[in-house]
Amino acid sequence: MEYHLKLPASSEEIKKLHVGDIIFVSGSIFTARDEAHLMMLEKDESSLSFDPSEMALYHCGPLMKKAEGVWQVVSAGPTTSSRMEIFEDKFIEKYGVNIIIGKGGMGEKTKKALKKHVGVYTAYTGGAGALAADKVESVPAVYWLDVLGMPEAVWIFKVKEFGPLVVAMDSYGESIYDRK
Image 1 (cartoon, rainbow, N blue to C red):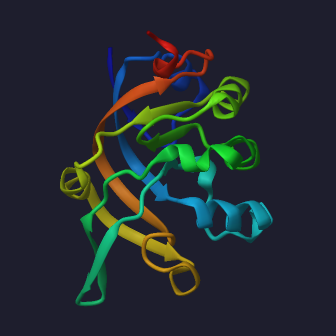
Image 2: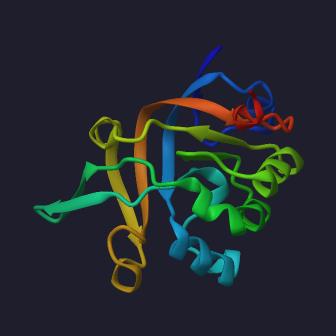
Image 3: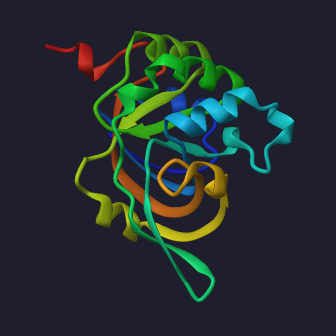
């Protein structure tokens, strides 16, 4: 099945998704790699200037440029998600993120957290950074650029029809990576 979701996605919408479905998302997504995950896990949720539960989490270290005072995305391909496996379950629990976008898969801890908290992990094609950049309409904010640097900073992207994303782990505990 193919779904076009407006973010934030409700639990009811997430429960409709199954491994192998294709989704496209519109709304706000935020990037977070290793260092951003660690920083956010150390912070109190109320200290953030954005609400991760209202957005999809994108494992991405984008290449950005600033033109006339406005950030633009040059390339925004996914980064290897398995690096976040050590703390993704805690991140899902703390921030209520219900859509994760990445590449290469996640492990057992994330799969269990997605089932418990009603979320999905979706795979985006590696090497398609220019295609991803084309789906970003604007960059409303960036956080911790001065501390973490460009690839590790948290970027907020407003996207339209971002995808195609393949549901690789669903809220029922199914994983495309378990299939033989």
